[in-house]
Amino acid sequence: RDLFMFARPSDSSSIFSEANLKLDQLSNEEIDLLNSFSSIAHKKNESAREIEEALLYLGRLAGTAFRHGIPVDLPLPLGMVWKRLTEESIDTKETLREMDILASRRLQDGNNNHDAALVTDELLATQRRLLNSFAEGISSVLPVELLSAFTGEQLRDIMCGNPDIDVEMLRRVTEYEGYNNDDNVISHFWEVLREMTTSERKLFLQFVWARNRLPLKESDFDAPFKIQKDTKSIQEDGDYPLPSASTCFFSLTLPDYPDRETLKRKLLFAIENVTTMESDYVTNDVEVGEGWRGL
Image (cartoon, rainbow, N blue to C red; front, side):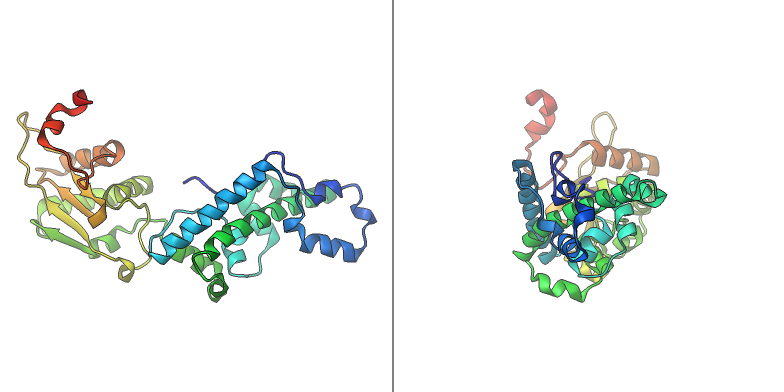
């Protein structure tokens, strides 16, 4: 989930490092060839092969999710990945800044500019080569020839969805069972959800839908979000049960909490701690009564 740019093997090396001392001896034509084919001018090693295979698999997963309309949380650089996939021209300096701020600053400082340019070329060449594996994985599921019909921003948004959880859009696609839109507990629920941070909203979405991003627009939802009334009675100690969810049906079972603070406390506890509070799994009353002692 924390993937930002394609990993680079620690012992990776390329033709740039070998030609470092000889670059001034190359003709302009040879330098053009070197730059054009830099993405394959790398030594092969086991670490690099493992990374390429992982990216190939990641591409297949991303392509499969795209075909099924499931947004994936892939915070990859816009210039190096998404614009490359759509065959857009990119700004090298801006692309470098997205991936490596320190390398970008060294290049801008102008100190030992020749060496900084070599390091930059090697970094970008490595990323292009690894991007080939990611694109190959996508091509096994999607016709990558059609990706150029989009801009880099459009492709990123279509595949990754909206990084911000739009509470108002979610409310517009919500249906209620056992509750009405103007019930106090429903009003309290939406107030609590609006007050949540982005990370807490992602946890909530993961809890009720097993995803952490919403589609870009309402028409992209394959099913409405459902809030169902929990018919369980109050516990013997007077406490209320936790909310539960069914990710397959994108639904939340919500007890009729008496006040906003109780709802907030129970909901936050559920999304932050109770990762198995999933009503798709069958748990009998005996197991619930024993709790952790029955493990």
